[in-house]
Length: 264
Image 1 (cartoon, rainbow, N blue to C red):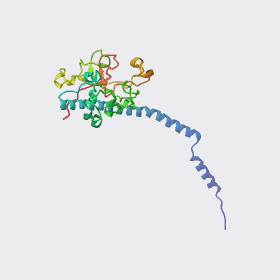
Image 2 (cartoon, rainbow, N blue to C red):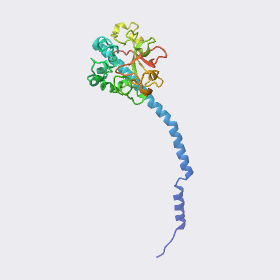
Image 3 (cartoon, rainbow, N blue to C red):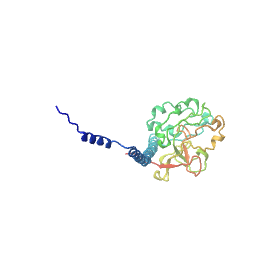
């Protein structure tokens, strides 16, 4: 029996095996290219996500405006805004956004509300902490409880909203007024026929900043309302969801939506 060794073929196999591997330089080049591609694509992905969130914000406002229309159809007037009520010793009633809850598929939350008590009394301290998805803009990040009511213990006592009704166009701090020029204000009861400028020419709702860091009320609110200035102030769907179009007010509107056409 004869044995034959093919050394030349063995060396060729070794050379082929070595050429199939990456060198360190090649690996670093590939990693660099991948990093550059990620850096280029990430802003585009983030921009696309933010655009989708803004579309959702706009849709939420439109759904809220549609609910106001449905309320008008059911009650023959737009919902009234929060106002001082002598029945409660001057304390404030629930906001318009609490009255339309059944029309934004939140009838279960509306069923928990004691409308015969002010929104910021202990009788309603649990229900006003409910987050309403339709009242929140995803661009603002996760919603968090805010400070509103010194009659309720703690500083996290109410769920916020990004949307408010246009109460007035005048220089009224926080838009607290029962003599407003908007379609919804304290004890308003405005009907469609009262909108003499035409519903297509009239602002109904607006959007505002979620949590203003420079709110001047934080420093002057006192320890019962905002102890040490450590609190989150915002407008709440239960009370305070009101805006003014007057320039440079804390409550001035950022983005408005007109009346929607009635759905057919």
